[in-house]
Image (cartoon, rainbow, N blue to C red; front, side, top):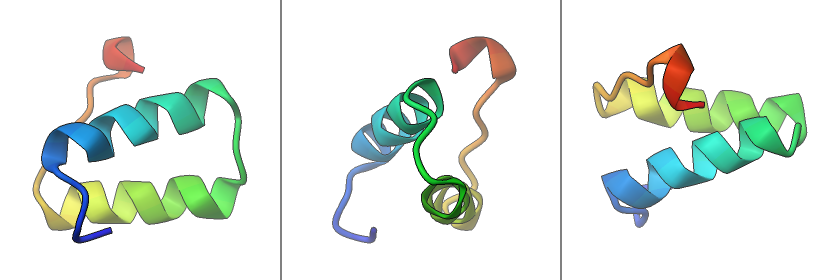
Length: 45
């Protein structure tokens, strides 16, 4: 995860939510977003 840019991480998270991917994968993305102090607003997903 650390090799993803912030922008790519956000895009991956939004796509994962749209595609309803494995909840564990979504949790990993969410954890990385929190670690980087990046917040995603519900209207962005």
